[in-house]
Every structure is written in structure tokens, then in C-alpha cells.
Image 1 (cartoon, rainbow, N blue to C red):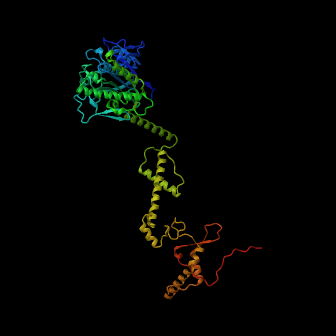
Image 2: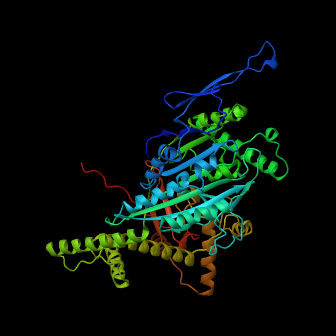
Image 3: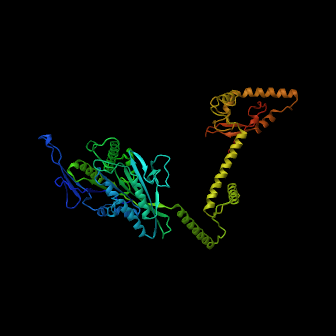
Length: 572
């Protein structure tokens, strides 16, 4: 970004034989203009009416030629546009004060041409002076009449009428008019032909102050795009110059307008009022919101007002005493415009096609450098092309063998191979997770916690307690049968023995099994049980863990005395 700068504001006084020398005076430096207004004696003795004003601007153009006006106002703006800086030159003032003459000039005399044709001439002359750059120029001509957008170049034979009304569109690059035709011009004569075509299509009407009064705001835009011929850099610069000829402000009661002219004046004054509101907001550094969308004029000039462009205002005023009130209004607008700051910056863009070509060249160079490096380090077989399916399958096999422990390490070849190794680790892990999940689903049945009917059926069958834990679980978080202390079996021991006796006697009667001694039962019981230490340290109790075959069966008490395991006695 460039440094901030103020908007340049100039005043051009229309030559007249009835100049009010006593009321309008300007300083010797041609930058100060003083206005003196006689007091209205009709207001009586107590009259606090202000009678003197002083305005300091960037220049006062009094009896200035068209050539001097262009050199002072527009030459630097156009010159910087070819370096990538946007520019805006705007003419503002009362109806008949000379805005269109300043901007376009008179067609009768070549020396009286205005800012616009001189700017086109300067652009093409500067292009001839820069043979090292390929510069293209395009132009467009927009008219805003009664808050409607019109293309002044739509009457050309190769430009058809727009099917949809034109709209103002915003994007990150700025403001553009959707539906507005933009024309390529390769030489100065073509640009002048387009300018004259647009001028013939402008809406004008007879007025008390001007028989050819412009009844619309017009914006002629010059688009510049410059590419370097000597550098292969993909960077290029763009810029645009907005040349704005505003419609004249007027006092409806004073001008006596009526009918269509009165309607036009209403729209003109409304849009100029919104423009002034936007200027006041831009001049106030504490304002966060700028009302650009209040009318089509301010919206179309959004990136020109207070944006990243060089902006110049030319305020056209009358030098006659009869128009002093309108002159004061125009000078106030100019002084407010001087408070607006802009931040000019070069508009740099990148050519996508040239960028791709440069990147391809750089990639080929880097590949050659890698090939030389690999040959010097005795790695001629290393490639940096994308991996095919065979190479990916080989890496997958290496990852699996590494996880199984049959491969000690995976050789590192290049960055692409490292990325693929990590990717295959992710693939193998995902496959293993799916295999584990499938195995669990085949072995177990999952019950939804919100399926209350199924849960009730499982609890009724005795497979789950009221807390939702499986029967036999110690912590309710595993599929094991749990650990049962001895103290919890005392109440059920007799019942278990009775059940075993009844079962044994019935089986003996049927001859299904041979009678077993109590010692044999003890042996069987001992082989089917396992003593496990208690979970509490220092408790001294043992926990009995049973498997499925003997979890509900306990042997009867043996009549023979059991051997008790005692610790060996200490030798004396």
C-alpha cells in the first residue's frame, strides 16, 4: 500500500463579463478564494447573518485555458495510471457552470478539447514511449439517468441491446457494471470514435441557464493493462481512469423547471445530496459506515471515493453575483472533498497461464537437480514420480510385516515414500479395527440401551440385573464371569450340596454314571477350581473363580478328613 494523501480539489471560474469583483476574490497564490455577501437589510437591526467565507483549495483556475486546466488537473493522474494506479477526475458544479466543457470540451475547435480527449491522447502517446511493455486499452461509457443505468455505446452495430437491466456488482477486485459493454481500442482514432458515439447518445435538454444542459451523470472509463515484454514474470499491472461528468445542481424554485425537466432535476439533486453525504462520512475519521448504496451514483463510484486511487475534483462555479448562493454551495462541497483521504496503490495481478509455464520450468529444473544429486550419492534408481499400484502394495506389505515383527525397519527412500508409509499405517489400522468389530459382532449380541423391551426380556431371563450389568460381572464393564468370595457362598452351600446329591442318586439309579467316592469328587472339584488372591491387599480372604462347567455345581462334603496345607515349621 502507498501512503495516504488528500483528494485534490480545484475551482474553475466560468468567464463572464459581469464578474462580481467585490464579492468574489482570490489570493495571490491562486489557492484561496474569499466570498463576501452583503447583509440583507430586510432582516432589521439585529442581523447575525454570516457575510464572509474563505476557502483554501489546491488551485483556483480563473480565465484558464483548456491546456492549462489539463496540465494542472489531469496529467499526473493519467501518467500514474500507466504505472498501475487507479485515477478519478470529477467535475461538479451548478448547471451551466462549465462542467461538460471542462470534461469534454467544444467540438468546434481542436484547441478547446477537454480533459477526456486529452487523456486518451496522452495514454496512447505514453504507450508508444514504452516499447518494453504490451499495453492494451479498453473503454466504456456509462450514463445514470433518473436512477437508471444506460450504456451509451450500446448503439454500435456489433453491440446488441442488453436483455436484462444493468446492475452494479461488487467483488474483491472492486466495482463493475454488469451488462456494460467494454470495447478494445488499439489506436487513438478508435477511442475518439467511441467517445463521439457516446456523446451523441447523452440526454440533454434546454434549461434557463444552459440550452444544452446535461440531464444525467456520465462516467467514461479507460481500462489499462500492461504486460512486460522483456521479463518472463507472470506479474502484470492493471488500472482504470474514471472521468466523471456530473449533472448540474440547481434550485428548482429559482430555475422555474417544470414537467420532465423538473423530474430530472429532482433525481439529480437527490443523487448529488447522497454524494455529499458520502463525502462528509468519508471525511469523518470516526465514521465506520459509509452510505455508498443510497443511490446508483455513489455505488458506482465506491472504489473511486476514498479508495486506492488518485482523485481530483474540479468545482465549476459562476462569477456572477446572481449565482452567489449556488457558488457557496459548490465551494462547501469542494472543501469537504479535501478532507477525504485516499491510499493509492499499484494494482498487481498474475497471469495464470504464464505462471503455470514458469512453474513447469522450475519443476523440470528441480527434477534434474535431484537426479544429479542421486547419481552423486549412488542412488540412481530413486524416482520421484507418483507411485503406482504395485509400489503401494509393496509398502502395504512392508507395513504389515513391520507390525507383525518380521521386518525390523522400513527403508526411507524419499518424501513421497514416507507419506505413503504413513498412509498405509492408517489403512492397516482401519482394517484391523473393522476385523475386531466384525469378530465381536459374530460372537456377541449388542443391545441398544434405549431398547427397553429387549432389556426387560433379558432381565426377566436372569441374564442381566436391574442395574444393567450381566450376571456374574464384578464391575459391569467386562464379559468375564467375575470373582466370587467364599463368604458369599455360605448361604447357598447346603442347597448346592442337596442338588448334587439328588442329581448323583438319580444318575446312579439310572446307571448313567459310576459311583464316585468323596475323594474323587474332591479331586474333580479341585481340578475345576482355582484359588485367586483377593483384590484387597492384606484382607486375608481368597476369591474363587469358576469356569462355566462347574459354576453352578459344588461337590458334597467328604467324609474323609481333608488335608490342610500348612506352612513348614521353622527349624530350630
